[in-house]
Amino acid sequence: MSVCDAAFDQQDAEVVCRELDCGAPVQVLGAAAFDKGDTQMWTQEIQCRGNESQIHLCSTSPSVKSNCSQEQNIGLLCA
Image 1 (cartoon, rainbow, N blue to C red):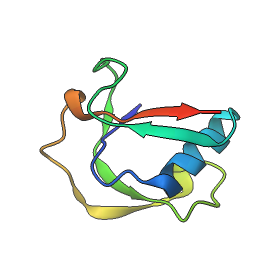
Image 2: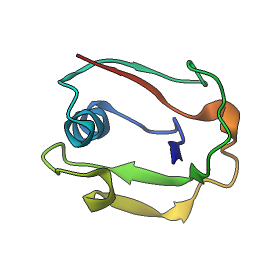
Image 3: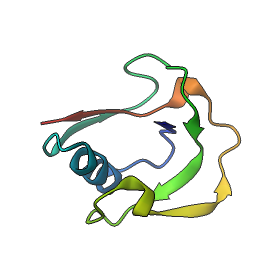
Image 4: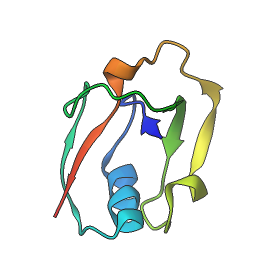
């Protein structure tokens, strides 16, 4: 699933890299840095504390980002 780059931060990156078992986050890239993709978009704002083992364990904002498109999926480099 793609994640919208709106409000994606270092804590969110920590959780994603941990879940993928690919080291610490090196750089968060926005605006479809690796192409826009064609997967389903997770449009809720993710609010991780940084210690969760998987991104679905993070809380999300109650509002859905209806203006988020595939061109705004997050790009993330892990060590």
